[in-house]
Amino acid sequence: MSRIGIASRPLTIERRGKGGRTGSGTIPVTKASMRDTTVPYIADRSDLVRAHELMRGFGSAAADEATARATQARDRDNVVQFCRWRQVARLVTLLAHPAAWGTIH
Image 1 (cartoon, one colour):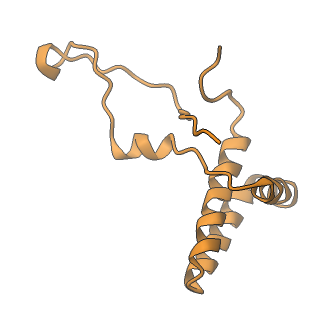
Image 2 (cartoon, rainbow, N blue to C red):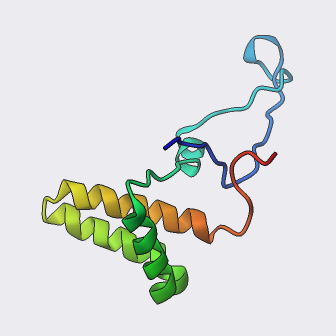
């Protein structure tokens, strides 16, 4: 399975001059912008089923519910379930986004 980069917001081009100064057209990359483009890892079909069930049962609060379940798993020292629920939360956020994501050909 391949990983595809996405952007949840449009990129803005910062005007920079030669050598990275104002005017050269470089795109600034920050930790916050990298966090916004995180694509969830889908281990198997069960992750998609979990995301679908959460979205159906909790609506717009589905990502918050998945995050809460990840926190509970972390508190129980269950690393595998923590990681899985964290990825499900990212998947729910991605699926709930109304715009297209990734490269459109």
